[in-house]
Length: 192
Ligand SMILES: [Zn+2]
Image 1 (cartoon, helix red, strand yellow):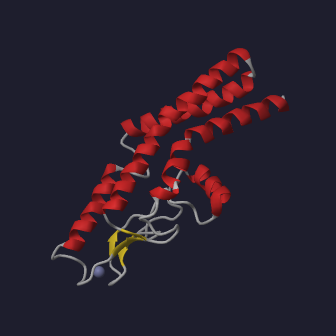
Image 2 (cartoon, protein in one colour):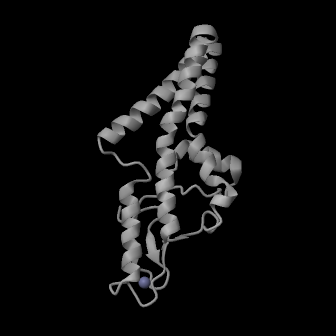
Image 3 (cartoon, rainbow, N blue to C red):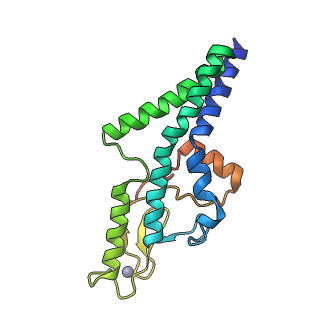
């Protein structure tokens, strides 16, 4: 009984890790982050940041494709190997695919959306226009909101999700944290 439970857990954790590969690895390559300050510093709102939000959105959806890997291996394991490991892999990858698709159909927001990228673009446009918050607008995305470092105005009340930068808490702790939170911001926005 215990042996099967542990096998199920091994399968589940393996599947969970495989589906997070795109978001945990690709954006964290060194060459991909040279234009950004190191985590957890605030990020200047510019075209690079907006593009990064769109990339993170892509990696978020790419996890559905990666979920097919444990789905196939899980099926093999159920047929020819350990049924418990296979079932663990199936449950996690099947659940991921279902929850991403139903979330999408229900219009639930992922951490990184097109809307978010558009809102950041609006912040950028306003900073470049005559209606900017002050004479020297410098919008940066801090942990809880987008603010102007010059005048302190809150320009977008959105806590910052993971942006794919290498984590300041190190590879291991950073990965554990990302595995648990899936990149969601750990703080609520300021109005709440
Ligand atoms: Zn300002």
